[in-house]
Each structure stands twice: as C-alpha cells, then as structure tokens.
Image (cartoon, rainbow, N blue to C red; front, side, top):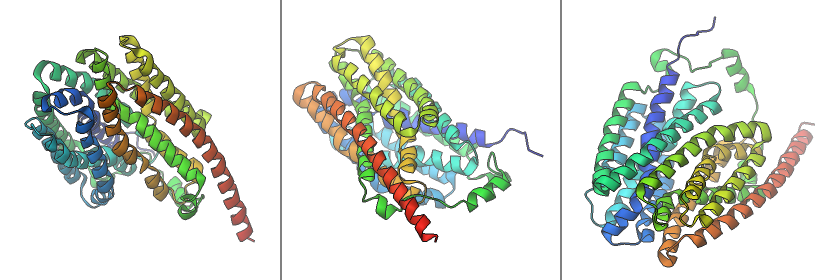
Length: 422
C-alpha cells in the first residue's frame, strides 16, 4: 500500500531553494547593482572593477571539482556552514573596504561559497531525496530561486540608494549569514535514510528496471573530437556571454539616466521572467524538442538585445528588454544537460556535460570585464550589443549544424554496434 503522507523531501526542496535564493540572486548575482556606486567611490572604471568577476569565475572553475568531492564526503550541514561562512563573511567585509584589491581577493571566497550553495547543493539533494519527476522538481527550485531574486533586487537597490553601498554590503551580508545558517541547520538532512525514509517517488520495481537498462550513446573520446561538441561548446559560451550582460544592466540603465529604484524594479521583473522561463522552457522542450526550443531561446535573446540597443532612455522598453533577457537566461540550467543528452546520448553523459559546462566560466572570465572595458572606452554598450546579436545568430546556426552532425554520429555508432552483435 502506497504511503500518502506528506514527504519530508518537499521540506528539503523549500529549504534549499531559500538558501539558493539568498546565496544566488541575493548575494552572488547582486554585483551589478554595486558596480557603479563602488567604482565611483573607489575612483576606478567599471572594466577595472569587474575584473573581480573574472577572478570569481576562475576560482569557480578550479574549486568546483574539489567542492564536488567535498559535498559527497561531508554531511550536508557541514557543507552549508562552510559555504555560508565563506560567502557571507567575504560579502560583509567588502562593506569596509576602500581598495580595489579587496574585491580581487575576496572574489575567491565569494565564489567558493556560491559554488557549494548554488551550483552543487540543489542538484545533489534533489537526486538524493527525489526518485521521480526530477526535471519538474529542478524547475520548481529554479522558479523559487528566481522569485526570491525578484524580491531581493529592488530591496538591494533601495538600500544602496537610501543608505549607501557600504551599509548594504554589511546589512544584507549579516541577514544572509543568519538566515541561511538557520534554514540549513534546522531543516536540511543529508539523505532520506537519516530519517528512515525512501526518496520521494521510490518504486522498487522501477528502480530495478532502470538499473538494468544499458546506457547508449557516443563515447566521450569520440564525441569530444566531433564538430557537434565544438558547436555545442560554442553555443554555451555565447549563451553564457549573453547572460553575463545581466551584471551590466544596472550600469547601462544609469547611463541612460534612469534612477536606481527604476532599475531595481526592472531587475526584479527580470527575475520574474527567469521564474517563468525556467518552467516554460522545460514544457516547450518536451513538446517541441530541445534543439528547436534552444533556437527559440536565441530568438528571444536577439529581441531583448535589440530592444536594449534602441531603448535610448525609454523606461518601458528597458523594462521589457530586461524581462526578456531574464526569460532567456533561465534556459542555461535546462538546455545544457538536455542538449548534451540529445547530441551524444547517455553513455558518457557526466563527463561530456561537465566538459560542455566549461563554456560558462570561460565566457564569464573573458566577457564580463570586456563589457566593462568597452563601456569605459566608448561611454555606452552599443558595441557589446552588436557583438551579442552576431554571436547569438552564429551560435544558433552552429547548433543546428552540430545537431545534424550528432545525428550522423549516433546513427554510425548504432550501425557499428549492430555489426558487433553478429
């Protein structure tokens, strides 16, 4: 007889979504709203300051494999405490700093904490606590995170406008420290067996059947040499480069003459767009296929950049562009794993997916400061918009080419396997 009682897995989902919401859009993604006031106080350019975001991406690239081993060996509460202390204390300390080198140095613990709390905590606990509808659960987690971002963005911009960036770093950092520690220590559990439970949706027969299924697809050593892989990697680099502009939206808005309150509202609407997109893109992928959906995401991205380019101080156009930008960037967490499986199958999925995702930090390392330097040099982001429009169109065409190449690879692999069976 099936157990109809409420499952503690849903408490886990809510708790880790709250932690990710504070750590991700609350702290990690708030760098854009601090960029202009901090650079003005320190007397440095946007490009020079935004170098700390590149340092953060490099730290993430190095730390993620180590953090992955750590989260599998240590209790989840230990990981949460470590992540919270690394991120929030560094965030608080920034409020006392007056030298740009502090941002370069503290970027490392900020990135290390975010990697644990944002990149790893959610997916690991979802896989431990849920045994069905994992895609839907991940979508719900991303939606809650985005909605929290919609709350935090205007709060942060109002705090900066009314109390200054130093107070905001310190006050929100203390809030994050206390809130995330309380939620993590009270509600998070390492695994269902700690409470004498099975994962939500556990079905013994289905579990046995899924274990006996043989993974099919392209071996990693062959896939990594194919045009399909390089076009997919290019697509992720461009998509992340498009998403990276979010850190410059506040500076772009200020340059058009908009005030911080209006910009905060626009960024809040962007987070609502991400919440909608995280669910919508998953639904469209099931109905239309992930390749066609990905091309559609690019179309939305092109429209958003075009609106930014022609907005010229028009508040409504700026807000619509910011919403569409948020809608499109929510796709990154969805399309990357689905495209990897679509292109190469499930045989060497983990190795191929981790390699494809290298495109994200690589894009962040190069493009986030580059956008800042372009703004410092020309006084606007026009050349950034032109670059992104061209890059998105090229990447979309490359994705279609790569998909056709991957179909040939999969078909060739299937024929070879049939021959070997005789």
